[in-house]
Length: 174
Image 1: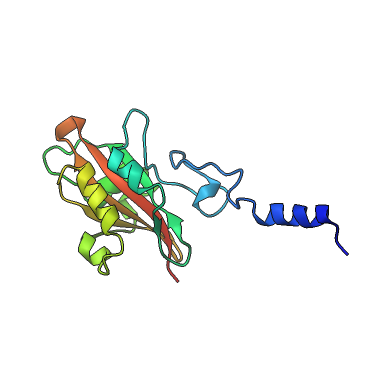
Image 2: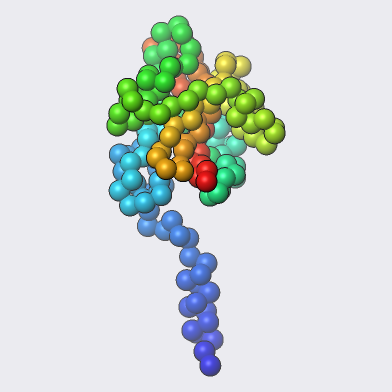
């Protein structure tokens, strides 16, 4: 028969965070946070680019529902939009430091097509608020196999001082 100490050790281990010991920020080239040790991670934030408050609030407890319910994380990147607004697929791949920007599997979606059930209205509204009403776009970035990342983004500001802001989440789609 197990002792109380053995049982407590079992409970403590069972309740331990499975991501413990892995970096949480997606600002590096590799991270265990993306699903496996050494797996490449796209750049979502950069030093000196502030995350707008609506995005900080909405990502506190928002998850993308798929085969693996993953949290939404804020996106804030410098983006010289040159008067054209949101980036095309190759520009977006370069912005997030995709390792093969010209051959990246990126699909641009309308938010209403991405969220046809209205499940992520709060997310889209927060992104729209962060961009002060600018157009919102969803970029689906294939990660290989059944994984993809959804980036719900808009622009904040104009010209060289502009930012690409929003949220992203990993989806496992089997």
